[in-house]
Image (cartoon, rainbow over all chains, first blue to last red; front, side, top):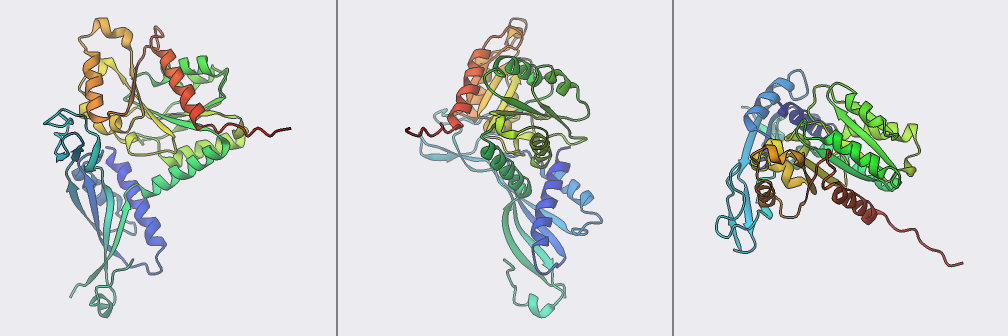
Length: 129
Length: 233
């Protein structure tokens, strides 16, 4: 299950960011955007995340995965289309190959949610970046 | 009341790996090395292709190999017979090479040899059609292999690898007479996903197509090398 390695990479990326922050507030939720045209299976990622975050700085954090569809753009037809993953990637109208991918390659950590120790701060809904 | 606040990150999930890959590539660039990442499913013929490549090209190109294998050094030992440095990386249970593992290989290359002497580093990834495609290691080009025994539908089923490839070698073409396989259908399926890829059918056994592959290797290496500045006397 290669999602184990993908999760490891995700945890390292979050840890690098988290350690660079002046305040080490507990992370309660990780929001990911995962494209349909990637090597990541969201269900497996969810499972691996729950297992691998135990006893780490991400202990207890939940993972929220937003999936994005594969959308390509056909230059000949000047229109977007949805390739059928595993079956057909060429433009359904003119059969041009899949050239530009407009969506579906995302593997992005969109945002993190933190527990706020100080309620007065959280009321301001501070964006920490 | 439970209160939370947010931080918008917008960074790639594989950001840490990508940074490592960029670092590796900077080393290669500094030493004037071109690096290819060879990827395929297990048994598609990466090691056989490397054997032929080392035999044919190691006289005019200075080559080193970084060899990823899950547990053994069998492939590395096969390649050492060609007299080139082969750095074996056992990936353990990991099913792909990542930039950190390749960085370990680069440091050994730097420590044991003068890295400036090399023109080309060939990274043989772990046999797997899925995740090596997502983990860059610092390569300048991705080379995918697909053997004709795997069937015409593989590019459609494992599209990311074929989308990312700069060069695709369709291997074991000598077996075509024994199989019901349509080579042109394999090519058409790959082209649907990646119209820019260079496709070269080869057979390591008969030698068919290998000259085209060698030409691709030579020209890719040459196109990256900045010609020495000639100083008028």
